[in-house]
Each structure stands twice: as structure tokens, then as C-alpha cells.
Image (tube, rainbow, N blue to C red):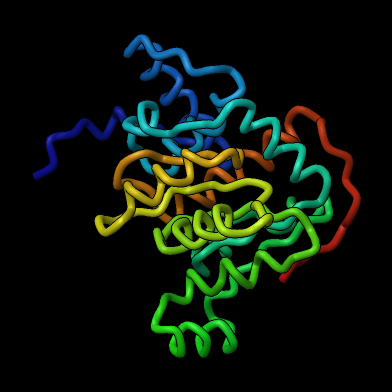
Length: 230
């Protein structure tokens, strides 16, 4: 039998639940004596909200000026390329479209699958190559495949091409920590979660936090009213 007092249950309207969750996160951070940098606060809090994991306070890492750089890219119509359809589904495409951006995931594309099989590599790796051909600035949002980060690092080192921004939070055990460290050694702006934790839900949360922060602060000017994106 559950040892919990039903009278302590908070009965909230649906629109109040998220607000209350953030209040609880703020209270717990205060109780722990944790003060987040102002420019990073809402992004880190949304990741905690998504995961209920306060470890992200210690491990979520931002390059200098990362939040402002990412927001400016979004306002100026940058696209987001991710490595899973789960993240694709989770990122708020409608709000991103207000600034002219789209979200893409090439993992299920036939040409990506065929080339990956021919090379004996991962579709995530080939997806990064495909995305690098975009004529628009791209925010690479990686939540699952460390091979995607490794390919980005390889292209950064071996060519004149550079991604506009990298969100590197793949989850797992094989090459995950090394791939994140390599991205952090480049001069590309990034948000990276050090260690093994991450995932598609985390990368979507970071993207949405950036998009919502633009809307909250009124920094962006809507340039498109498209209802859906690819």
C-alpha cells in the first residue's frame, strides 16, 4: 500500500502544471544553494523539468555566449537538424517556423540508408554529411548518436566547413563521453552535456527552451506563419 497522504496531492489545472513544476525546481535549487547563470537558467531548468534530474546543473556545459548565439541563429531563420525522429517530433516546429526555421531529420531517408550501408557506417554519420550541404545556417541537435558528433568533429577538422552551432547531448556508453569532449575542443559554439546522460527528450527540451525564451523576451520578429515544417 502506498504510504502517501492523498490530501497532499496538488489539484491543478493542466495549464498550471508546468508552471508549478518550474516553481518546485526553483525552490529546490534555492534549497541546495545553487544559483544558475541568468542567460543559462531557463534552458537548464527546462532540461531538469524534462528529466527530473538535477545532475544537469553540474554537467550541462555552455560555450561562451552560447545561449545568445543560438537565439540569434533561430531569430535569423536557422534550421535545426537532429539525429532522431523522436527529437524531430518533440521540437516545437510551429514556433520555430515563426522565425523562418525548419526542423529536419534525415535518418530515414533512402539515400542516407543506402550510403551508410555501402560505407559500413551509421546513418547518423551520413546524415551529418547531408545536413552540411544546407545553404542555411544549421543548429545540429544530437541526442542519440555519438557517431553524429564524431562526424561533425571530423568535418570541422578536415574541411573549411563548420556548423553554426552544436547541441551535443547523446546518451549511452560507447564513445559518448569522448565525442562530447571533442566537440568542446573545437571553436564551434555549443551546449553539451558532459558524461553519459542525455537523449532525444533532452535535446528537444534545449531547442524548445531556446525558442520559448525568444518568445518570452520578445527578441525575435516573426517572419513566417507557416503551420508546419518538414
